Structures are given as structure tokens and as C-alpha cells.
Amino acid sequence: MTSKTIAMGIVKAVLILLAFALIALFIYNIQTVLLYLIVSLIFALVANPIVEFFRRKLKFSNTLAVTTTMILFILLIIGIISMFVPLILSQSENLSLVNTNAIQKNFIELTNQINQYLTSHNIDGKKFLNLEKIASKINFAVFTDFFNSILSTISNLGMGLASVFFITFFLLKDKVMFLISAKKILPDEHEDQILNSVAKINELLSRYFIGLLLQLFIIFIMYLIVLLIFGVNNALIIAFLCAILNIIPYIGPLISSVLAAILTMLSHIGGDFQSDTLPSTIYVLIGFFVVQMIDNNVSQPIIFSKSVNSHPLEIFLAILIGGFIFGITGMIIAVPLLTIIKVVLKEFFPENSFVKIFTKNI
Image 1: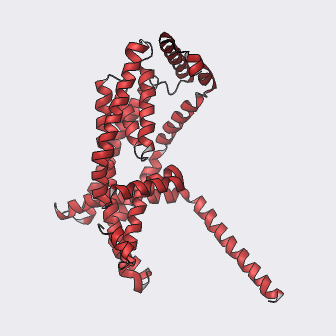
Image 2: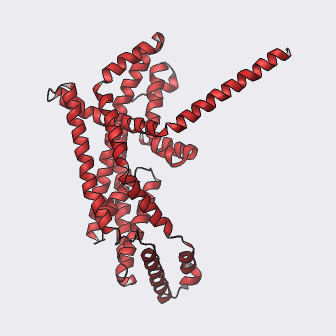
Image 3: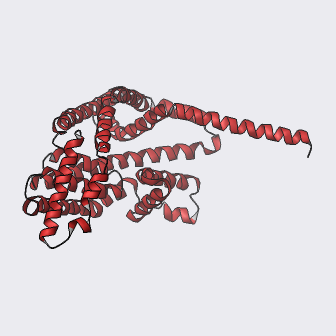
């Protein structure tokens, strides 16, 4: 091997690394646009069955069906914003999320009540839990910063939503044109397999995201009923936040239960801890546990297994693996990714014995 060959190899390697670096830099700089595209694809997957309903059942033209669907989405989002944002703003002081001194004062009062309750039962609360030390070390400004960042994000969503709706409209309206263009680009020997995979993935993920929205709506209603039964203040907001947290499989319900317990205790500040705060919190936790049992054993397996044609055990293992590899993000994308993998395997390796078993319901 001559020095010239070695030099050319080094130059080639440097150029390849430079090309990868430039691509990574380019992707980093357009990450917002990529996020808009991903969200638009999800919107398109959810909206596609609605568009097809308008086209086939009501005989709408494609453009009219897409336009009607987008208007429905816009009205839905406007309704959610008009219902929750003013409510959150008006109730933020009660929730003690914008006033650091208020939440710290309430938390200290709550710890004193817990200590008094433990002392009345001959338990040294200060030694057992050392709540005062915990309270002194908590940076309550984190809560206000987090809440204010949410409000800031909401106020800046206008441009993002407009971009997402614009992209989604054309993804739905011109999907046939995109498929024709894709056919010209795809290699001829794999064209049918790739197009069949895309069509099947589109069908399954559309059903999955619709199933996910249905699951969150059911959980929201059940959480709301539990909180209203036990007279928890700001029940609508708490139920909505806890339902959204259920997007994170397995961990989300745990976080939502802890959040509900904390907000329930804070909403009962001023009352007797033993006869009011503690029983209400326990009842809410029991109610949330019942809701999650119903969700885990009834609604979630039925909705997800039917929507993506996967066994509940497959879904559980996929979420577990996704969580170990990519954390919370991996848990959220595990089921869609499992669906994509199964469809691709079935299209490209249909004769493989493992693939036949793994994808028998696809």
C-alpha cells in the first residue's frame, strides 16, 4: 500500500465524516420543520379515516372532504383552548402553580399537619420522614418556571399550528400525487412491497392513533368522575392533565396518581388532616387505581390490540424494550414502531417461519 493510497483513504474518510457532520448540522437547524412534518403525518394518519368517510359515505369531493375534516380539527382545538386556557389562568392561583410563596407555604402547612397526625399515633414524624428538611430543600421556583414555560409555549403555538395544518391539508389532499411521485423514485424490484407496506402502515397507525385518543378520552372522563365524587377543586384541569400523562405507558399513570394526590392534599389545606385531607386523598388514590385497573385490563388491551393487531404481551414487551433503550420517548413510540417493523417484515420476508408467527394477525 503506497503513501498515496493511504493519503487518498484518509481524505475520503475525512470527506465522509464532514458530509455526515454537515447533514447532522442541517437536520439540527431544521429540527422545528421536521417536528412540524412528524406532527403533520400523525394528524394526517388520524384524519385520513374521517376524510374517507366523507368521500365514500357522504360523496364529498376529495378537496371538500379534506377541507371539512381540517375545519373539524380546527374547531376541536379552538374548543379545547377556549375551555382550558382561561380556566387554567383563572385557577392558577388556587392551584398554587404561579405563586412560589403560596405553594411553599401550603407545602409547609401540609407537612406540619402530617407530622401532627403521625405524632397523635405515637410516630415520630420528624425522625421518620424529616418532612421539614425535605420542604427546605425543594426549589419551589421549579414549579412556577415549569408552569410559566407551558403558558409561554401555548401562547407561541399559533405559528406552529398554522404550519402543521397547512402541511396536513396538502398531505391529505395530494396523497395520490405523492404516491405517484414515490413510484417513480422507488426501485422497480421492491416497488410493490414498499407501497403495500406504506398502505398497511397507514391503515394500522390511523387506527392506533384514533384508539389512543379514544383511550385518553375514556380515562379523562373516569378521572373527572372520581375527582368530582370526592369534591376535589379544579377537577376538570387535574383530570385533563392526568389523562394526558397516560400517553406515557406504565409510568404515566403512576405520575398522574402522585400528581392527583398532591393536588388533592393542597386543595384541602385549612381543613382537618385526619378527618378531611387524608381520607379525601386516599379515596382519590383508590379511585385512580380502579380507573387504571379498568384501563389496563379492559379498554387499553381492547383498543390497542384491535387497532394494531398485536397481542397485549407483544405491546408490553415492545414498550419495555423501548423504555430501556430510549427512555420515555421510546415507550411512547414503541407501539407505532412495532407496527411498522411487523408490516415491513411481512412484506419483505413472508416465507420466513418466525415472521409468519410474528405477523400472523397483520
